[in-house]
Each structure stands twice: as structure tokens, then as C-alpha cells.
Image (cartoon, rainbow, N blue to C red):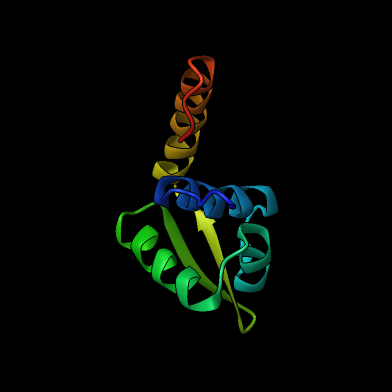
Length: 91
């Protein structure tokens, strides 16, 4: 049976895609984070409400960007992941 990702892991995956693209369109995030459109829009809304992402319209295209808070979240998530991994714990 395939193991499910935690909500924390999914949120981090979304932020990682946005970071790697230096601002990403919804399609890039869909494929990169491996989510359905419905689930992704729910998570994007939450990330925007928490101040981790901002949405900008550029030349008729909506792009998502990390905020400073989003960058800090990813940095801490990576640190905690390494710590948990050292003890054999999966996030």
C-alpha cells in the first residue's frame, strides 16, 4: 500500500515548486506537487491566508510567489526534516 503524504509535506511540496520556478503558474504547481486541481486550490488559499504565498497577475497569467515567511517556513521544514530523518522519523 502506498504511503500518503502528510498535510505538512504537501504544503512544503507546493512551496518547493514555487521556489524552484522562482514564481510558478498553477499548472506547474499541479504537476510538481502531484495534486488534483481541487486539492491544490484549497491548499493555495490556505498558504495565501497564512502569508506564505502571494498571487500576482502578470500579462494575464496568474503566478504564485514565496513571501519572506514562506521562505522561512521552507528553511525550517528542511531543518526539521533532516532532524527527524536522523532519528528514523518520517514527516
